[in-house]
Amino acid sequence: MAKAAADGNARTWSDVRPQRRASIPEGMWVRCSSCSKMVYKRHLEANLHVCPECSFHNRIGAAERVKQLADTGTFQEMFANLTPTDPLGFKDLKGYKDRLLAEQIKTGRVDAVKAGTCFIKGRATMLCCLDLTFMMGSMGSVVGEVVTRSIEHATRDSLPLVIVSCSGGARMQEAGLSLMQMAKTSAALARYDDAGGLFISVLTDPTTGGVTASFAMLGDVILAEPDALIGFAGPRVIAQTIRQELPEGFQRSEFLQKSGLVDRVVPRAQLRNELARLIDFAGK
Amino acid sequence: MSAYYQLDFEKPVVALEREIEALETRLKAEGEQSTNGHRLRAEIDEHRRKRDAALREAYGTLTAWQTVRVARHPNRPQTRDYIALMCRDFVELSGDRRFGDDPAIVTGFARIGPMKVMLVGHQKGKQTSEKVACNFGCAHPEGYRKALAKMQLAAKFGVPIVTLVDTPGAYPGLGAEQRGQAEAIAVNMLEMSRLRTPIVSIVIGEGGSGGALGIAVADSVAMLSNSWYSVISPEGCAAILWKEANEQTNTAAAKALKLTAKDNLELGIIDEVIPEPVGGAHRDPSGTAQSLQQWVLSRLHDLRGKPLDELLEVRYQRYRRMGVYLEQAAPVPSR
Image (cartoon, rainbow over the protein chains, first blue to last red):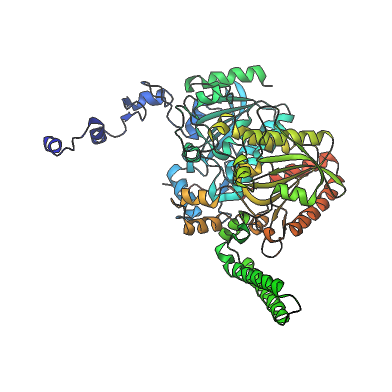
């Protein structure tokens, strides 16, 4: 250290931290990516993956989301037999087929969505959750089809519909077919609307691109988790276009609420309650 | 000046065109009856034949990336050109009644042949000032809301809707996000899927993602043969998946995205390709407008005969079947 200081390369504490992290036993404690405090992993899990120190909402997968929202043991998964293919023979630096396989092995999931019927505090509900862990929750044919079938099932059985979104947008590797999922899901929601169904859209970090620009923004009621990134274009693209820095908090849940685009910002711990309350007010 | 705007693969054509022009000037100066007149006339005809052959060759084998560049040609006809060329009695209507008027989307009643229609189209702009006002065809939420308001007006009176798509994408800016760009596009798709009047849509240049689809949910969709339509621009795709957008990666991305009219037809995303004159729409705007008019009239003629409930059911099913996936219990590969 002293030698480094003499060279004029004194390291600050923030430089040193990553090395200290390595000495902590694997899996017991985690460092909050927002406040940098050490958090006991079991506490974090018990707190729905929200940091007990700073209330930072960590991203969670679809399985965890379902576990948090549905009454224990009531979730009955549907449409799990739909699997993605590579209709375009898409190849960038890596082939789409290989990418899919790698993601499936990594996550143990077939694609980026999990849907089914469940009870939320005793209210029968059609629940559909996007899964960020699989290719950034991007929407290709399978995600679009599962979302559409969920909407159609909710229409048929007169169930309230809850879709929890988290997605980088439409999946580039299915190009035009991904784009068409936006129209398909929106058209299905038009019919659900005609039938008088209640659709609650829950936006979580991050919800962007083609998912925001289709079903995610079409909720009768739109809820958002605190401080989630929600937008059409990505912040970097916007900064490049307008050639100026973006204001503090731009495209975050609270900003969207102020802009009139989101009804309520709901902390994760209250989400189940809020959904049940809304279903009581408007659901059938 | 801009008449000579050249794409690299058009170079031999443009060189020949310049020579033809020079010869014609000489012919004019010397007179058709002069001693050189006959020789010059013959030379011009010969050059024209060569140019046509060169055009056919260049345009017969366009790569996907070259097609994108033709679709962006500065002389390519835009919505206002087609309005002038194929519509009569155009009554332009402005504003979304909420925030403002977006010149990037043009809307109004018009007559095409014997038909009354509501015309909705992206406008990129031709002169610099118009381009800036139109944000180069990148519409704001107020543009999409204006389009929807006018389409609902049309539906109220049973007037069919014609939309012309030509946008690099919806505008990615501060105000656009604040005013709900995503919401505006989403609502348009939802409402267009249940508008009780026939809708036909043509991609006339660029069909850039949600910004295009926001006015392109229709009963019948066509593309001009040198236009493109996909979920992202080749540059955007290259920058993300190839980590860098340059000539080489753009070419690869354009090919991978299957964005040409022919590809989109094969994928079932569009219903028909409308051929452009040899050398692209910018070489013969009125010929292109004629083809557009013919297609619009024939499609609207078919669609107008259908009962509305059937029309809406067929429109719903058109989008409902989009997507390719396998339906089976596939074992998840284990760790």
